[in-house]
Image (cartoon, rainbow, N blue to C red):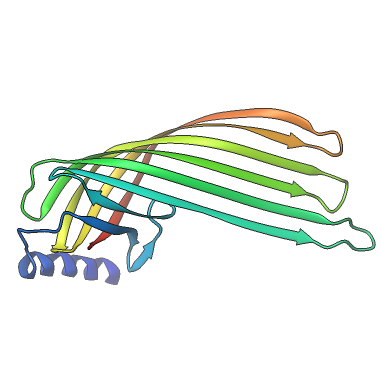
Length: 198
């Protein structure tokens, strides 16, 4: 409740005190905004750039690598677990008529992800290796509001379509390979995005 009240106060105060007509439509570093916490932008780091008065390109890159080794003991063999992921995305925002500090827009975005999960057990000589490639298409709408000339908040909702294809290897020492594929369709997520222009 306190966080909601603070957010409403900031927005109302900025409407009265900081209304600007010459907002910076340049490059911005962007973050997802959750209460008083900043988080990753589309699962990574990224930003937005205005390429015209009505068009914004956004891009992001994210990923992780983690690895755990299991040492050999008297009863267990050496084991290992490795996980890798890379996600790259690019989007286009088409902004409608500019209402001073408010700018409604339609958004489309495409992203590619690659994940690799490898696990070799310390017992029973079990091995599993999964590789997946995914393509996702997001589309929706939002409104960008400038708190100040160089700072804006965007509220948006994106629907999504997704397709993934990969392969899975299971067993040891004679692996069995399986091809995998999947499809996703969802009503998406609503998010608030903080952009800092420079």
